[in-house]
Length: 369
Image 1: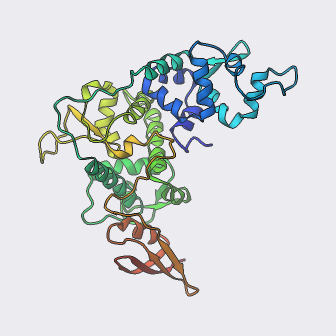
Image 2: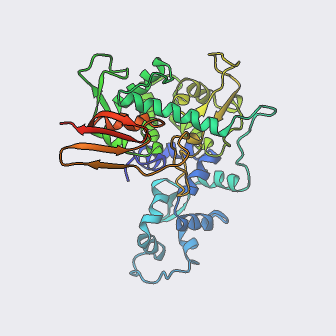
């Protein structure tokens, strides 16, 4: 498991122990970490929660046999070793800490988890504020992310939206992550023309949207710390990302409930990732609202590890169908895909194939060198 897999592996491997303790002062963070654990680890945490007891006492009543280890090895540690893959995250995430050769729940984590399980886990919403259409927010998030990928593969549809300055910041993050590098084409390395995709960049394009988004956000956190940006606090940003997982798509949330650092970064950068939508102050106005924001489906499911997490894809495609690619011995390629609603697929194909013409559900081309 590498730090690039998801947010939880990032916390386990790149957040210092004292920073983890600060992170766990937030109820939503602790609930999300708890839900990310394997069922066996969750059961152990609940046994250690009330009353506050060590792992040895919690495992003493476990149904699995504990008398199969050598005499000099504590029985609970033997059981831990047998289920290492499921229980090790408890120590890596600092959910449990060592005390007197035994393990106990980390006090900040325990306190916040009790609050969360007791019902103190509701994000305050704005009263008497109109809701936004959930489908519209999903389309907005897809448009934002597709625009980033289009720019990465050097393809900008004529009707593509997005501020050039906004995209230049995203392109800088992609470059710092070594997903793209300066190319020989005319144009700046911060626009959609003057770069080339690296080997890591091609692997990035094959990942699901949630993994792609996390890679970019992780680079954003790294860049903010490296540049020592005034008021930048990665722990508050991580807590905000966990907060989004407990929001409801379409419901308005007041910005006054946000930490000032998070509020500033949300308006300046986080909204550019498509995880939140900040409406204009007035219809047709370019100025963003200072009072409300909405979470998108992309932001809602970013911190989830559930197998039931829905795929994030183009909402204009009513039914996701499997595409087929046929390669002939003369290097001619036939790619069956929705070329009208998914121009990004054609742009990705064009990185490897000289696309000669497109039909509504078919792209034809030749493999290039």
